[in-house]
Amino acid sequence: FINDEVWISYPSANKIVVYDKESFQEKTSISLEHNVYSFAVYNDYLFYAEEDQWVRVFRYDMKTKERVGVYSSKSIDFYECNLVINEKENIEKYIQRIRTFN
Image (cartoon, rainbow, N blue to C red):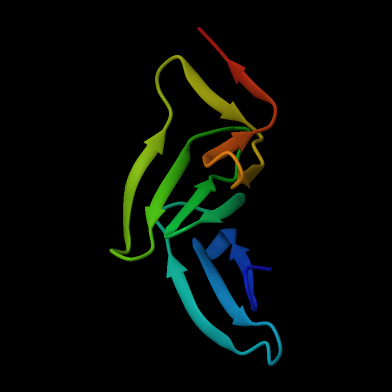
């Protein structure tokens, strides 16, 4: 739940649908370039990870409706990550079970 909304990812459709918590009517949907395994929302940004073992994490600006960042490199990808937001410390993401490879 985010505020009074229910956010559900549909990996096979590459989108997240936002529903009203009370009526469960669709309020909006966010179409993405990749399937969504895990996601978290912080301010106006949506962070999401692909559905796979070794994945990239993307940052999507909900105001401009554009992907504005990718967290990945040749030396690091994320393994079966689960995204969480730590608002107290103003940290954008924590990722569980991070592994690096050469």
